[in-house]
Length: 111
Length: 112
Image 1 (cartoon, rainbow over the protein chains, first blue to last red):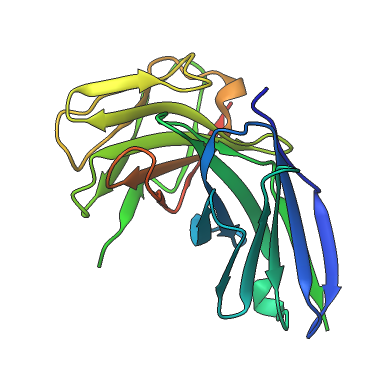
Image 2 (image 1 turned 180 degrees about the horizontal axis):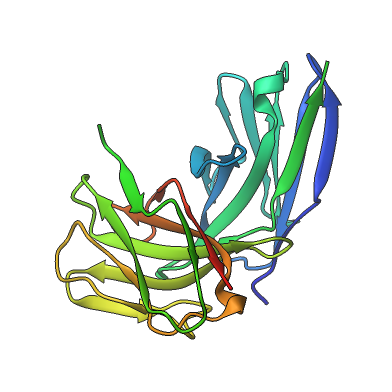
């Protein structure tokens, strides 16, 4: 199948770390992406990881990839209220044109 | 500024009245794509284009048409809109297929 799955909601306190999880089914994935969608706005590419990498860090963002379990996570350190948004993971596969998205995780940050 | 633009941002129409949503990118990208976003379903690809005059169906192409006469523009056409096409639509582009896609701001469509 082509499923990319995410939990629908996550609520965290400001200053804590957030971890958003994603699982996918296709082992031929080449790139895995995290997009952020703020209310009323389009999708913003946050970061991506190539499938032969285990980890990628970019300022407050850390992406972890477990290829064996087909599990991708996005960790946001020191979560701020401005991080409140919907986060989508997506995968692209070798030699195809498709980008397969998850359903999105709504992150709510409270003071 | 490098960007993907869509127009209109909001549209209310009635069943059967043809409409076009425009998409334009200024990054000289070869690959362009249209998605729709619906609650609980995430984003689903409607059509994509790998280059000028080359278009192909995505996952949910029924009821839609596209054209790619110029590299920068990729309009989405609804010949006879129906209420089940009420959705949030995103255009995206990337330099080549499989590369990072950059998204437009979205077009919210309501078909009555």
